Amino acid sequence: MKIENSLPILLLAIPLFFMMQIGHTSPVEEHVVSYSGFQVWTVATNTDEERSALLKYVQLYVPKPFQKELGKKLSEANITFVIKIADLKEVIKNENANIKTSTFSKSKSAHNMNWTSYHRLADIYDYMSYLAATYPSLVSLINIGSSYEKRPLYVLRISNSSSLCSKPVIWIDGGIHAREWISPAVTTYIIKQLVEVSANSKMLFDVDWYIMPVMNPDGYEYTHVYNRLWRKTRSMTSSPSCRGVDPNRNFGFKWGGLGTSTNPCSDIYKGTKAFSEPETLATSNFILGKANQIKMYLTLHSYGQSALIPWGYDVAYPNDYNDMLALAKSAVSKFLKYKFSVGNSAALYYPAAGGSDDWAKSIGIKYSYTFELADTGTYGFLLPASNILPVAQDFFPALGVFATKVATLK
Ligand code: ARG
Ligand code: ZN
Image (cartoon, rainbow, N blue to C red; front, side, top):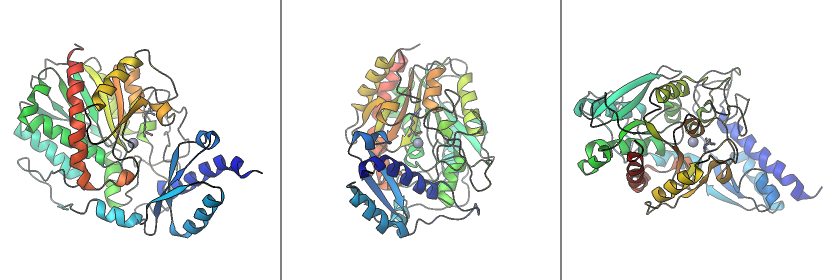
């Protein structure tokens, strides 16, 4: 057998194997995963055959006992790879070094929020309560349901008009995937800019904003306490040792199609049915209730530095794809520091059905985008907290472009 022919299998088998190491912990659920001795490798693929196996690059989480053997195998097969992170535990330790772990919850007249560290859910929720209490004519805190573990699901409405008359709405969510910490951080930065920085008040003239910083709070907390690289929700599955559903494979459009798994231990497990998860169900019901006003759906993920346009379930294009593409291009043209690629989600990355962006588009929200924020893989999900402000500041002007467009869609 020519070695080339075995590459796609190798490239698929190895990531799946190592993803399993990350995707679920031992049957002892509340066991802390330390990633001691792990490295992160980026492996390049060269031929079409290799590429068709999945992606241009694959990122592997390689435990110490496998490093020597795998390195040898890859070299023999002429596959280039780079050790992106030589000591995963160390990077995790340093990424959020400035965090103040205050255990007590703040009153409505104070908050712990800043954008120099990644915050626990309590800080984010306290900040939302603080804003609602401090700017009652501008901000309302809406409880749209609860998570599997009974944490509240909060949406912040930012509007300078009464709740009765509504302008066109821009929806933004973050934290669908638990480990993508830059997403809730940028989302709360956006909230701060819209509410507390008067220079941005023109962004409220013609548009109302609904912003949900953490759609998957159980997963988010789990990444802070037990496993930094957890992606999914925390619901019980049919497998006692594997928890969680990928919320971005659980939305009710083309549910269960390409790029999804029926295996509860997989990181892309689709769940038992569309909207099986209380988080995706509550979010979708809330959005449906406002579907006439919501003209834009934005969801923030990491990493990749890209603006992804539906459809994502397959390489397929909505009728008005060119409108969506043009607007995304003019938005990312505002970015000075981080270069973003723009394109069809399935073409740029991989087909993946059941995504929130596809669902939003399917219910008639014309402009629906997934943003994969920084970086492009140096730190990946573990982007040090010192990057929050640069990333958020670079991103914010895109919202000016979006607001201007949405204002015309009465
Ligand atoms: N990285 C994201 C994910 O895998 C991309 C989602 C893009 N949207 C889609 N419908 N496939 O969830
Ligand atoms: Zn994501």
